[in-house]
Image (cartoon, rainbow, N blue to C red; front, side, top):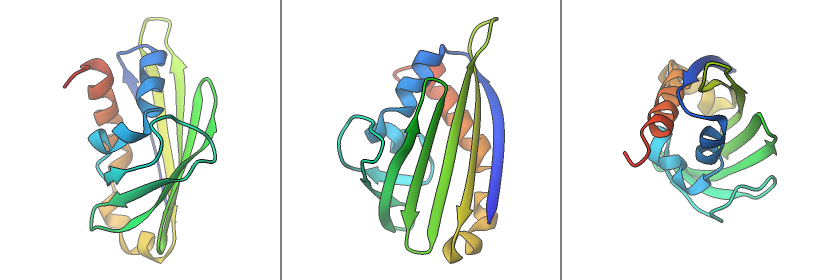
Length: 136
């Protein structure tokens, strides 16, 4: 099992960070693993969004919880499963502290464990860029 967790200060309001995380069709624009994500354009718990990832593998992605300051997700491919969490905390001095963690399970996850080193940081960096510089 692979487990990662990192925190970044995103210089954008919590509402902007949530907006990005709750736009399922835009996830491939900033999440390095995703090539395509289909399904409805709105975020909903329990909806299965078809996904294609690097390497051309297909599976499903979903929101498992949507709360004011927490968003949980999961995605599944043959031999691979990720549970992810995004914790959002508004900062008094401005911006949002975002903690992203995930765990991977399955034989493909074990085989790719080295490739996923630093992915939590990369996802946070890309989220931060998107939140802080809309339109890029």
